[in-house]
Image 1 (spheres, rainbow, N blue to C red):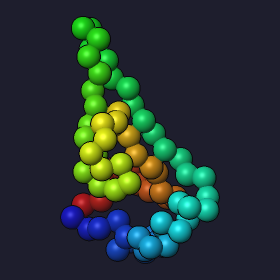
Image 2 (cartoon, helix red, strand yellow):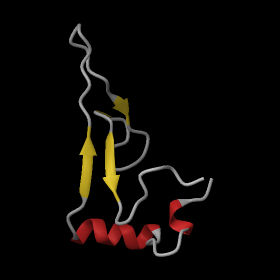
Image 3 (tube, rainbow, N blue to C red):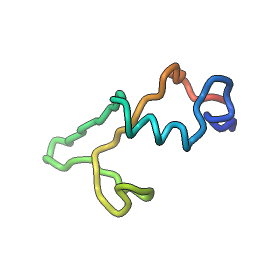
Image 4 (cartoon, rainbow, N blue to C red):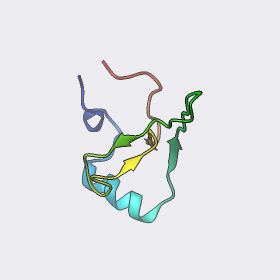
Length: 70
């Protein structure tokens, strides 16, 4: 699979990190609860939230395609 940063017009990881520090970003979080009241959570494996449980979600980059890049 092609890495998103390899696509023309995308920021390098270091540049994206600088933008995250300076600019507001769109993010999406999802809360899923089953009929018994259990909530779906995921354990973050990467910094800065490593070893914390969160609802599924993530940030959206400018011009990010809706479908995965093949």
